[in-house]
Length: 537
Ligand code: FRU
Figure 1 (spheres, rainbow, N blue to C red):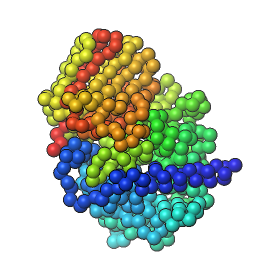
Figure 2 (figure 1 turned 180 degrees about the horizontal axis):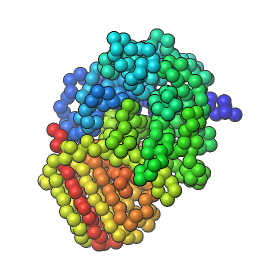
Figure 3 (figure 1 turned 90 degrees about the vertical axis):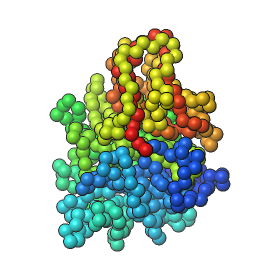
Figure 4 (figure 1 turned 135 degrees about the vertical axis):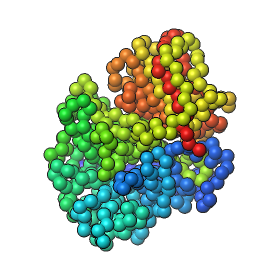
């Protein structure tokens, strides 16, 4: 039965890849040749983000291989440098000192006769467990999936295997290991995206791998020989699509002595608002088996999925290795798009951006563990001009700020709404071309919403604006807090101190000029409004 299921999933995936998800799009209009120089045309000015990472040219999807070492955060990514749609996968590379300003470096991994270089991770092998060190240099070891297109075309099952490469110059260049692949394919069509972490308690490398609709756990002493130690996922969580890009790490529970293990699993399709999204599980790990928390289990039996982000544009996100924040948090970044339309978004010479880097932490609220996301602290360092006000009485539609005062394409907005009543609280960004992006909270449904259906250029895909995204509110305070990060083509909303997050992209005809708010309960108080324009050129 399981075999039939995995063959079926395999077929659907191959079909998907060939027809639309990632294969060359049928619509030839979308197949554009990229130019080497960074153009400075209208499209670039309008849509290239002010501060979210984008490749200078070509296609980008998942973040890969992130590690921190010697003052630099490294970000690799699924990249096709010669086209603006998904194609032969490389690992592009960028570095940053603060997770916000990125410098693109030369491509780190090229496809070869074993296949395309699919998603994976990288670790700093401080103790040289791999033996790759030379002249006392610390090896960085990357582990990735080889996706063999020849086998895919021949309809084989064993298309994907796991391989390693090592760097002795702190992640700039890599040597592929001669013993590749290090994990062979056990007859599972979707078998990819290894994420390696060091388990300090057991003194072992642990690797999680997406296999069909399950996660396989492996352990190793030397990053070369891997032993399968358990599998997780059957009958648990959301199974609306193929499981991809897992991550597995420990987090302290806020205001307690407790520590829990968190498993992230991206899923496509099956997301809460359609297409791609990332679910998470919280539990315990004994060095072999991951067991989810009882309360979590009960809620999932009730069909409740725990999502890292409820918006449509945060996929395949994972965390940086070799670093935790001062609070013990993990640093995360996601791909700010969705396989439903990623190949069609209306940018000219490049496609896709990453989310803002985020800090992940864990709280326990009413007996349930919840993953909290917030923009990394480093973003505050870019705050410039500020507009602030307290206790604003909102009576009817009220303009909060216009682009005459604050540039609304590089902006942070913070607010609180005390004494929530049974109404709908709406915020709207608009421009004089009639484009509108609205978001807010509908108390009667206890749900947040983002409506990008009138944001401007939408015609490139029906899937882009076929619904209003919604997210159930899980916090129960009668004060609602919001933090919004705005760029030219993206909004990231962190409600309730990061307990519910919604990330969505949009393409207005001209930048938004006005932010206003109103509610159908007529009067309410907006408190602690703080709007910052970021200093980015
Ligand atoms: C997720 C994903 C991964 C795969 C990569 C290929 O978006 O499908 O599972 O490794 O993209 O580019």
